[in-house]
Amino acid sequence: MDYRFSEEQTEIRDGIRKLCEPFDDEYWLKADREGRFPRELHRALADGGWLGIAMPPDVGGAGLGITEAAIMMQAISESGAGFSGASSVHLNIFGLHPVVVFGTEEQRRRMLPPLISGAEQACFAVTEPDAGLNTTEIKTFAERSGDHYVVTGQKIWISTAQIASKMLLLARTTPLEKVTRKTEGLSLFYTDIDRTKVEAREIPKMGRAAVDTNMLFIDGLVVPEADRIGVEGQGFRQILHGLNPERILIAAEAIGLGRAALRRASSYARERRVFGRPIGQNQAIQHPLARAWMQLEAANLMTFKAATLYDAGEECGAEANAAKYLAAEAAYFACEQAILTHGGMGYAKEYHVERYLRESWIPRLAPVSMQLIFSYIAEKVLDQPKSY
Image (cartoon, rainbow, N blue to C red; front, top):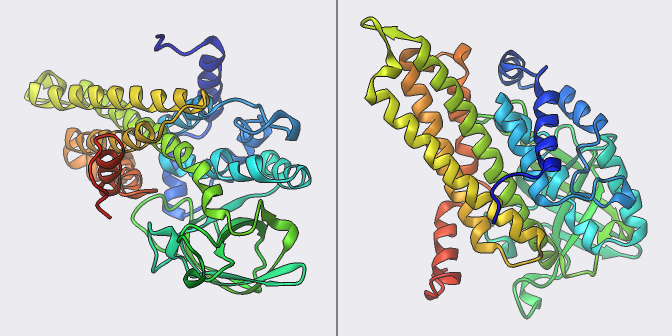
């Protein structure tokens, strides 16, 4: 068992670190203040060929694994970009995996290269106001009409919908009352966002202002049959293929954010002098920072264990969920300690750690709650009765 990155993996990490250098703390502070999408970072990653890191080579991707993708996303976040930077490209890495697995050859060649090149951007339209994490209860409906579908419904917490030209959309094609199992009758589409039929209403939120989050109102959107991914009615099974990679990537990004916060806190503790000595000389400052480091490193091991299992084609649901939980909690603790280490200055935007703390709530809440993770581990690992 080797816990070290390979030479190629180390080159990926170092390459991303170098690419992120021009996007310094002031860049992210301005993006957060103005609520401006980080197009320059997105373009730099596209030009460097990074957006297709886990996509197949035959459509322009690098053909690497989720392990390499996690290394990349962690490095972006750790640079100080946090979730503002990571979320700008997050969907590229895992979101269109259903197209890779279930799409036709024509769909793969039509849909994937523009995303990899940065010519198109996409959003992931699954969650709904009245369904939440109970995806089988979604009400957005795609009614078949000849060679196309007409879609009507609402979606919520949809990131990048303000700037995206495409969306991966999950909708019911068979009413819930007419299916044998709740997971049946859902279909997946990757299609154009027709702004005359789709209104994206931005949700003001606590953190990550640089990447928009929205409520979508869909009224009569025409979707060609050619944009349906795989077999009609099998959409739920298709999106399951992206769940574990998403949890792994979120975990890697959270650890990167926690490390960025810990780096700033440690630097401040060395430089800030009170009562004639660096505050980092005091164990009341040292010990929480040491604890934060240990928690981040432990979460990191679980994250890359999950990634390694996934890339080997082995079951990794428990590990991916555990990694997401552990990383989110470790990141939150590190970001909180960064503010406490800075004292009053931690509350000031110019020291950046308050932004880190606001963003650290994202992995604690999404894409799945900690309570559902506990329930999953209890049921799948500890053989307890299903609780929901």
